[in-house]
Image 1 (cartoon, rainbow, N blue to C red):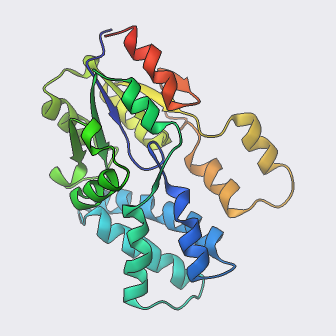
Image 2 (image 1 turned 90 degrees about the vertical axis):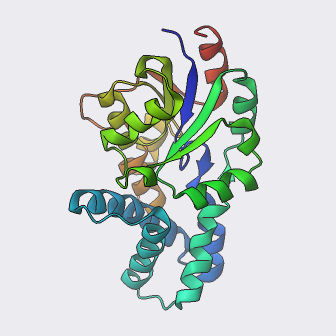
Image 3 (image 1 turned 45 degrees about the horizontal axis):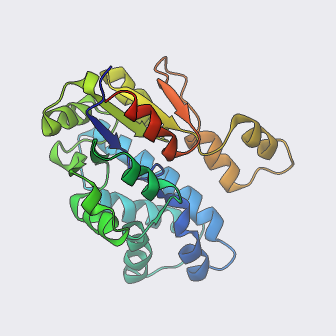
Length: 246
C-alpha cells in the first residue's frame, strides 16, 4: 500500500471536544461536566437524525440545537445570546498536545481534514490552532448535505484529492466514523484516547459519571464488522507508519 494522503477527522481526533468544559462550567457552575457530555452526545445524534430524515442543517445549527436541548433537559435557563456564545466554543477547541508535531512530521505527505463541521467552523478552528498552513484542504460534509457515515462523504474525499481509496489513510477517534470509512474502503487508523483497561476501571470504580459514560458510548470501536486497520495511542505514531509507505 502506498499512502499519498492522510485525512483526519477533526472533532475528537485533532481537537479535544472536552475542552469546552471550562466554558460550560463557568456559565453553569456545578453543571459543566454534565452539559459537556450530553451536548456532544446529542450533537452527534442530531447529525444522524437529520441525515436519516433528509432534513439537513449545517453543523453550526446542530451544535446550537443540541446545546439548547441539553440546557432545557437539565432545567437551566439560557438566552439565545448565551447559547450562541457557548456554542462558539466549538470554533476554539484545544488541539490535542501531540497533533501539531504529528502534522509537521508527516510532511511531505498531503494532509487534509474531513469533518462534519461547517466550512466557517472549520476555517475558524484550523486558523485559531494555526494548522491551516499545514493542510492542503479542509473538506466539509456541507458539500453533500449529509453527515458521516454517509458513504457519499468518503467519496467526496477521494474526488477532492483525486486519489483512489487505496491511497488514502483516514484517521479518526470516533467509532461510527471509523466504521463508515472502513466500510467505504479507506484504510483507517484509530486513535485510541482511552485504553479498554482504563475505561473498565472507570466504569467499575463506583458511580458512573457523565464523562465515563461518554467514553463508553463514543470512544470505543463499534461492533459493526468494520474494524480499523491499525490502532495508535498518539497521532505521532503515524509519522513512521506513513514514512514506510510513501
